[in-house]
Image 1 (cartoon, rainbow, N blue to C red):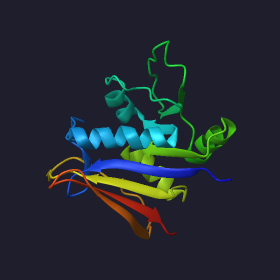
Image 2 (cartoon, rainbow, N blue to C red):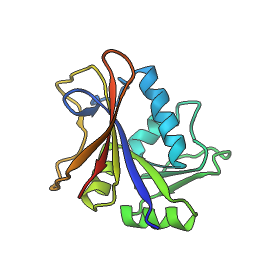
Image 3 (cartoon, rainbow, N blue to C red):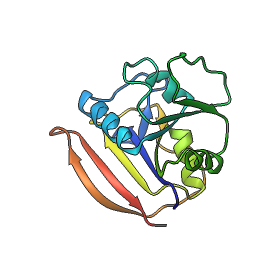
Image 4 (cartoon, rainbow, N blue to C red):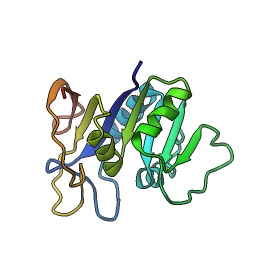
Length: 171
């Protein structure tokens, strides 16, 4: 059975996922939903920048398997037994997930999400839209050549100004 891959990203109304200095703009309700959704998927695949932010929090690593994708050395705490650091490509990461006996994974991080999308490995996308516009920042997807048709599955409202869109990828 193929691994179900979902992307979860916090974005501004103009599609920015992070400020240039990587400082956070996510609301507390969005962060809680992100953690709840990631726990549901049991495997969390994140890039180095997302790891650097997540590792500062008290909820990292999450239960299940945590895979950090980077070409750089990362210092892991001894108690983080469920964290794997790799520089493998998306298809090889899926093989690792399958070998560990998991059937779904959540991917977070712009460049990482783009690489999974480009290789046609993503089934779902969660976009948490923050009520903010930024002139400069890191875009949702890096400038790669791909096109995906989506079907809206759910709109979840966090506040009067903030929503999460849940899409299924059709192609």
